[in-house]
Length: 141
Image 1 (tube, rainbow, N blue to C red):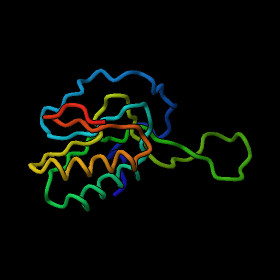
Image 2: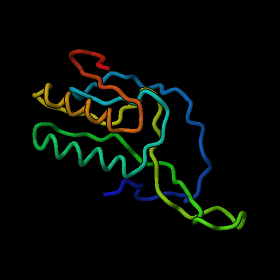
Image 3: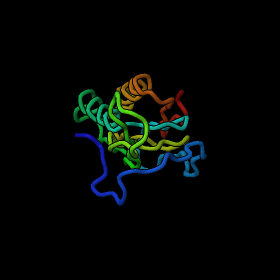
Image 4: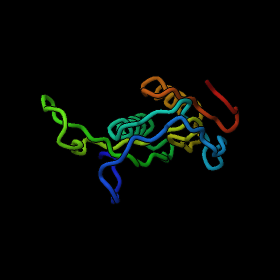
């Protein structure tokens, strides 16, 4: 399951400024553990799909998984060995724009030890610097 929007107004878009700080609160109101992004980055649809499949495989039915990623920007690419000019390339894939402090996913579980280990595993596997926010412990780096 590749992450892409159901409907979009335009297929091609300009690159956006990604260095704007996130203004939402970093506290998790509904979940026990949440993974929060620490730097501005783009997350591809296949990386988001990897997160979902990895969490389902490791946690099975121990926790409820809420993925907070929505792909919003199309990335275009020209085929290799083409000459310059002749317009913008065709749509290649969709990315999610991540800003510092934005929640990537949330987990609800009564077994905090196992869920915390899995969440810290994902932080090492992702290409984005991120950290776990545990409701009872506050910040876990």
